[in-house]
Length: 98
Image (cartoon, rainbow, N blue to C red; front, side, top):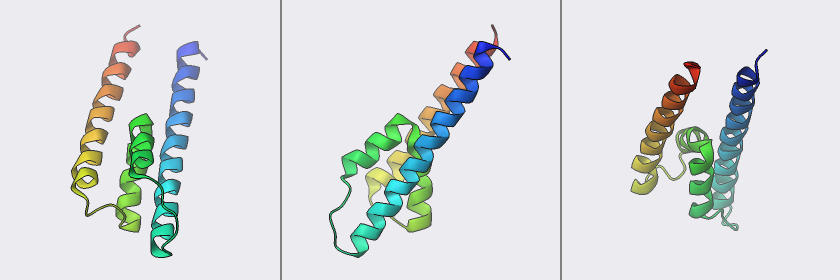
C-alpha cells in the first residue's frame, strides 16, 4: 500500500474521530442544559466544527434538537459543511492525479 493510501486512511480515521467527538460534545451540552448545569461554550462547539467535526455538530443539532433554533448554528453549520466538503473534494481530486 502506498504512502498516499495510508495518508488517506489516517485522514478518514481522524475525521471520523472529530465528528464523533463533536457529536458527543453536543449530547453532553444538551444534557447539561436540561439539568441547568455548567454548559459547553458555543465557541468550543464552533472550534469542534471548524476543526473538521461539522457533520458531528450538525447531526447533534438534529438528533438532540440542540442549538437548532440559533440562526448562527442553523445556517452556519450547513454552510461550513459545504465549504469543508468542497475543500475535501478539491484536495482529493488534486492529489489523486499524481
